Length: 149
Image (cartoon, rainbow, N blue to C red; front, side):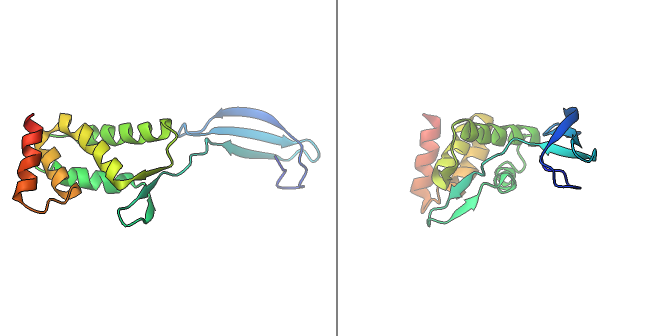
């Protein structure tokens, strides 16, 4: 690590501990040339997840956008925010653990629906109606029939 005072590339670690938010390692270092002490943080590098939209555009995975959709689907239902957060955490964890960096919005929606059906069936139908963009009542009825199977 380069010393911010003299530019020397040699330093020694004096103290090392987790950061306050526990998402990094805080290291106190001392330059071997000038003795200047400075702090560095070591964090795990996360590759951003990208969602490929139906028209081919790519946009960063947005937890808040997904949460808004789920909150809308679960309005006036007995589903806690903690349950929705856990659902999103599970999806994100599955994607990251699988080494995925890009996912189509269709596949992402399918992952949400697969988990949402066990949380609340009404919320599932609400989310599916927007996600699947039903063109008529017959498509909607077919989805309801498949839910009862």
